[in-house]
Length: 401
Ligand SMILES: *Cc1c(COP(=O)(O)O)cnc(C)c1O
Image (cartoon, rainbow, N blue to C red; front, side):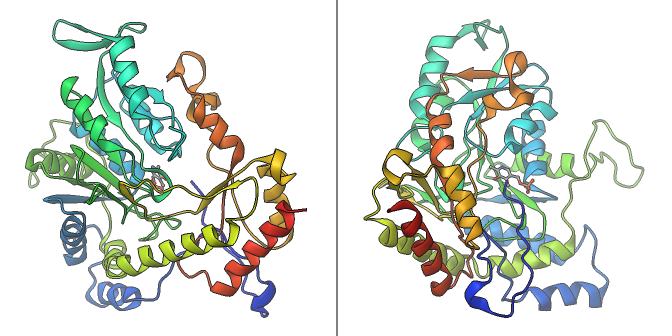
């Protein structure tokens, strides 16, 4: 989603640009990476890969974790492991970064875009229910989309911006309609749904450790699951599908989606700091909420009472009738004042690659409404109080005149 914003070092911190979201590498990263270089274990086999998998699984509360080279690779591998096939359909959030929709296309399946709900901006469980009930029917033991005739196989709820999707009704529907659930938790490591870590409740879940995410390995991903079968399949497909690792016999087409030991070393160091990172994000969120509470036309980032948000990227909605400036003009004006911000992602059904018969869009109305108004604000774990005060002051000045 957001490219890692690199900023040139400035001599006077008072007017250095405030970046949107940059990594925090203040723990054991150097130490562990040095250990890889000193011992020569730099590639895709090594103690840190296994340790990172084990420690992340423990953190999430899942039995298995399989490291991958990216979050996108984790999504692709998950769909392959579950046997999603060409011309199947997979329900996925309409308001998301594009990766999960693309991963569905990688296996030849088609995305069915489900709208966001207004309260928390996440996949709307009611619309999932409506789509399955009204638009699908059972034929010969298979669930098919009545309009396209295609088999409906899985749901990919994307926990966007650090906040969980309302999973319980979606898990219930998945059971009734015999669908797989793959959580895309790329943006929401550290978040919890009704006391459960995200990534614990779906059949499989995917995480990303790209540079802009809550914690980073430079690039990387992880699949978590409680199923030994799927964990083994995920490992198999992400490591070139070797049926005989000595003779190199292959029965399936696999992928080279392995994480290297050097990246995993960074991951272990980052994971040690995860709780502190989430605490920092929550402090940043509270400061924004307090600092902007009395600004008419600014809606703070929501947190449902059943959610513990990791507030990965603090995002507000701008109502231009009240602020006198819309989200796009505000982005430009903030940029002129040295404050980086970003709109959310163009909703999937509006993308050229997914228009017309290249996807199914089911009653997507709220996602474009949020998209028009949303602006993500500087949210780095290392954001100083002074820098955040500058952001808040700039917003107040621009929106209250
Ligand atoms: C970042 C992201 C991904 C994939 O991440 P990469 O590691 O960059 O491949 C997938 N889904 C969502 C929602 C994301 O934000």
